[in-house]
Image (cartoon, rainbow, N blue to C red):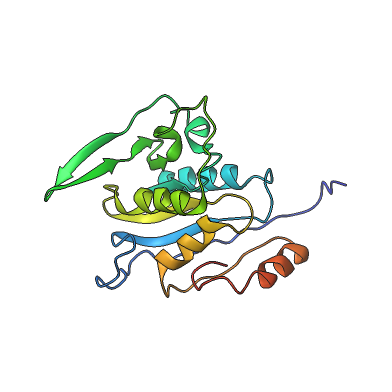
Length: 194
């Protein structure tokens, strides 16, 4: 049922003026990390992540987006860059992937590295290692926001993100009480994932 007289007000605030301590290794040049997650697929996680990233870039913020859905990457298609290939930059004897940039958003996805006609069939540790490389082996530079498009459910990918992010504070936002109940039920996952 649609209520044509309904008013929707959204108030989004964030502080991008402070930096995390330099002792933190996980995405050290990124001020704010926003993960978009859901317990099931097909609910619009990737669409929300892409639109939030582009909207923040349009405000002048420096934005990155990681497509953490290792088994079903969709961000290259959403951004119209599915045929792009990654370039490598070497710095201090170490190689870094250069994210593809479109609409002011720096983007990395396993979709840039895998054959789109082949299914990605990896066990948890391989998928987790691939995710860590998207975070750590990339030249992200300084970013105001990093959006993470997570796969559905609570898998090794979610646990890896929780372990990588350490003791970062986190909040859970959801439009439904049932979804909030699911998030609370999954509250035994490591700190940093909610």
